[in-house]
Structures are given as structure tokens and as C-alpha cells.
Length: 134
Image 1 (cartoon, rainbow, N blue to C red):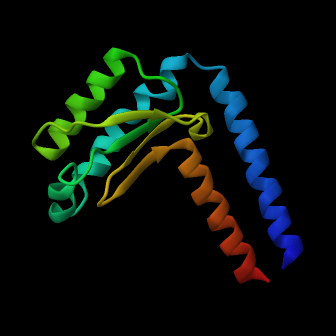
Image 2 (image 1 turned 45 degrees about the vertical axis):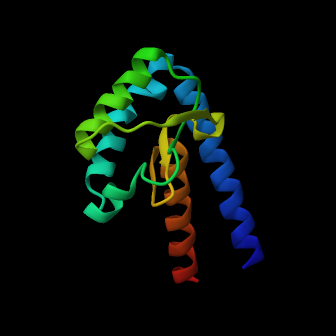
């Protein structure tokens, strides 16, 4: 079990390294632009009670892999307003470990649309599959 866990950890590190190198070859805008609508769609798909609570208690935090341009921040505001049916005031934080994408954290929900999140899900699924096989 320990060896399998170590192998999964190594696979995750390799996946993150490969993804980071591939993303680095793309225009910097690709690390954010392609993820805005997906995050807004995820917000829209939340249960109504969760959507209603977003921004009601505390300011949500939008995390990006790098500083957002003013145009990107406005695109997020516009997309989130469409998804929620109202404007959403949020703080912006950066976390290069996202690799690419966006994550919105509120007191009621965490909505992720990031490469890091995708890679974590893949590694978890592979690990679960390996445990079932053994």
C-alpha cells in the first residue's frame, strides 16, 4: 500500500510537471481566458440555495494562476453576473500552483475550474482504480 501511494505521488508530480511545461508554451492568456466560462457554468449549476448565499456572508475569493488583467477581471465579473443573475464582488488572489484556470471560494461553496483540480481528480481516480485492482 505504501509503495502504491508513493507511486501515485510520483505520478501526480510528473503530471503537474508535464502540464506546467505544456501550458508554459501557450500564450499567457490561455491560463485564464479559457476557464472563465467554465467556472461561470459551474456557478450556474449550483443549487439555488448555494447560488443565493454566494457573496452574502463575506467576500468571495477568486484565485488565478497569475495576476488578472483588468479585462480578464471584468470578463469574470460579467460571466459571474450572468451565472448568478446579479453582480458579484470578489477579491482576487494568485496561486501559480493552479497552473491554469480559476477557483472561486465562498463561505458556502468552492467552485473549481483549474488544471490543478483536474489533475488532482485524475490522480485520485487512478489511485482508487489501483486500490480496487489490488
